[in-house]
Length: 52
Image (cartoon, rainbow, N blue to C red; front, side):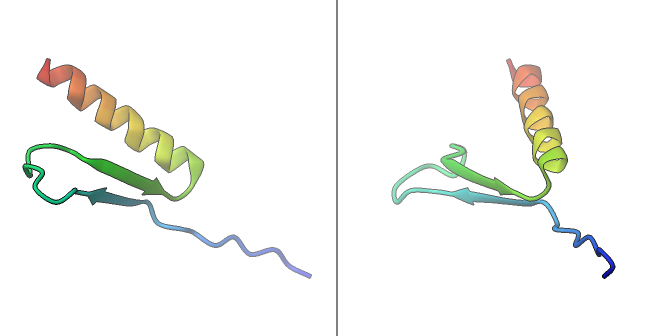
């Protein structure tokens, strides 16, 4: 029996509520490998820090 690893791509989905301005982030759903999700969160945090 051989083990094959399936590569799940990183998925980032923005969910905007009705009447919300596009500039607002709203909710986000991030899925994929834990390392990829953590890297995306680090990237988002660095971007937020650079804006302030």
